[in-house]
Length: 303
Image (cartoon, rainbow, N blue to C red; front, side, top):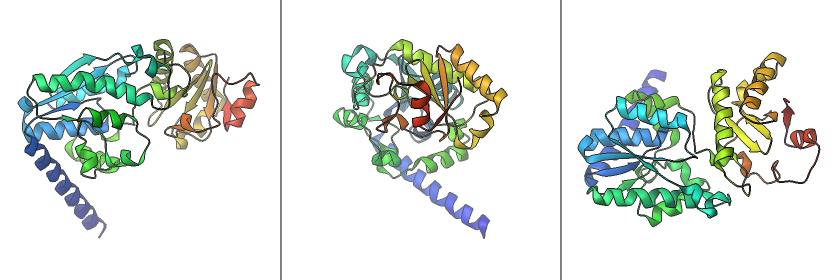
């Protein structure tokens, strides 16, 4: 009975994917905003199968906020699955509206991205510009979606009702390495709203996360920037093992080497968008005891 349910579920997913193929073929060609994440990697690979490589272009927008590890993952998928790729530089940090880090920061980022990609699609005669937004994104706060609409960008995965879980399952059936890849947004959301986004702060966060990956941390990971304090969010199931003295010291040493002076391990584990929660620790808040601010947020000091 269990096997039969699995077969039926897989058949339904395959049918949903056939609907996506038909949607793509009706357009004929496409440029895809390609970060190399779970969603855009899946969309790009299906598009190549549906339309052929000559009718698809996956474009990577590179900037200081785009993690190097994500770039490597994007290039790997493109190479292994014959996805044509173009890289363009974007410079959202030069926009003071973005750098000031308001709550609609992503709007300015996506405006910069699509203003670069839409003309490329037109120059190359590609019928449409696509992003990897999925159905789950429709219920989240996504100011960047407004910029996409302004530039006529289409979101087939969202429009056809593909959830993140379904995209992961279909990616696994296709043999895409991204099927189990943790969510990997740009680096800027690690910095609290209202605290300026700078290349130096982004590099510090990226270096700290890379150092923790080198220690064997897997799954969702965030190093949240709070001035000289790094608040580390690990998968909730893994938090306990990093509380042991020897492990905690390795974690502390790795993050301090990346440029932070103090480290806190968030006992609640990874929470998407946790910096958006009102009352969180802010780098620009009035002086107070470091341990008070850490414990007030439910964290254990590691340094």
